[in-house]
Length: 239
Image: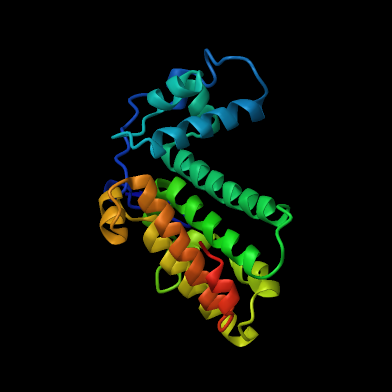
C-alpha cells in the first residue's frame, strides 16, 4: 500500500506495481530522453502507461513505461517521481477522457429528448468498456471520503454533471432525477465491468461483439424507460 495525504492506494488487488531499483537522483533525471516539449513527453508517458494498463500487462514498471513511450526511465521519473504519481496521472487521463466524451456528445448535433438520451447511455457504456481497467483501478484507489454508497457511482460518472446534462432531455421530476441517474449509471457500470464470459452469458450471444451490442441496446432502452417514463414511442425506437 502507498499512503498519501488523500489516497490510500491498495494496488495489490488491482495491478501489481514492480519496484524500481533506482531512485530518480541515482539514475539521473531526464537522461537519454527523446526530443519534444515537456508537455509532449508527459503526454506520451501517460499514454504509454494507460496503454499498458488497459492491455492488461501483469505489472507496471518505470522500465516498461519508458520503453513504450520511447523515453528513458529517468524521464519517466522526472515527471512522475514515484509509482503513486504515475497512477494518479493515469487516473487524471481518465477524467480528461470522460470530459472529452461529454464535449463530443454535446457537439454531436443530436435531436433533444429520446435521441440524446439513447446516445448518452450508449457512449457511457462504451466508455466504461473501453476504460474498465482504469475505472477498476480508480475503485481500488478511492479516497477515504469516497468510500460508501456513492463512490462506486462517482467512479463511472466522474462527477455530478451527468444529471445536469440529461435534465433538459428527461421527463423525470427534478427532485427524482439525481437518484434516477445514479440507478442508471450503476446499471451501465455493472454491464461495463462484466468479463467477456459474463457478458455473453447475460445476453445469450456467442460472440463478444454481438453481446456488447445487445447490452448497449438494452441499456439505451433502460435509459429511456427511466428518464422518459411513459414515452412509448421513445422506447419503440431503441433498436
